[in-house]
Length: 122
Image 1 (cartoon, helix red, strand yellow):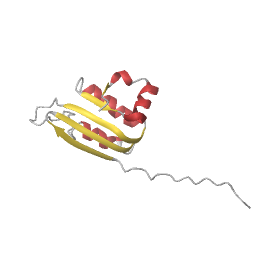
Image 2 (tube, one colour; image 1 turned 45 degrees about the vertical axis):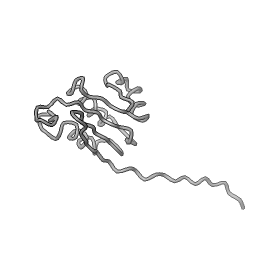
Image 3 (cartoon, one colour; image 1 turned 90 degrees about the vertical axis):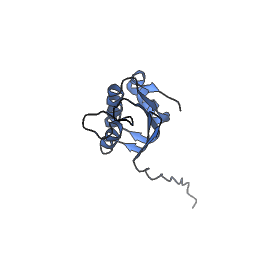
Image 4 (tube, one colour; image 1 turned 180 degrees about the vertical axis):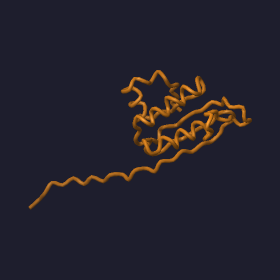
């Protein structure tokens, strides 16, 4: 007896990773995987340099370097991840840009926070 079966293969979740590189005075932070309640603190630590005062050194220890966060590798983001990004944007006023990718851009649009970020397309 013939059956109509559809095989669905789910991709395994991409492990969460944050990679920080420096290009001149610009700090580039690439994020991959899921940003949720469990991983948001790791992202927050990367965005504030792991320092309790929240000041990220820009290479000479004075703070104030521009930060670009590449979110194109993000496969899921919840409100805790969004909160971390909003706080970082506020803390680094004018020196914080995001490359959102489709998933994060859609979240920004749905939640009405797109205008709170400087969006960079690359």
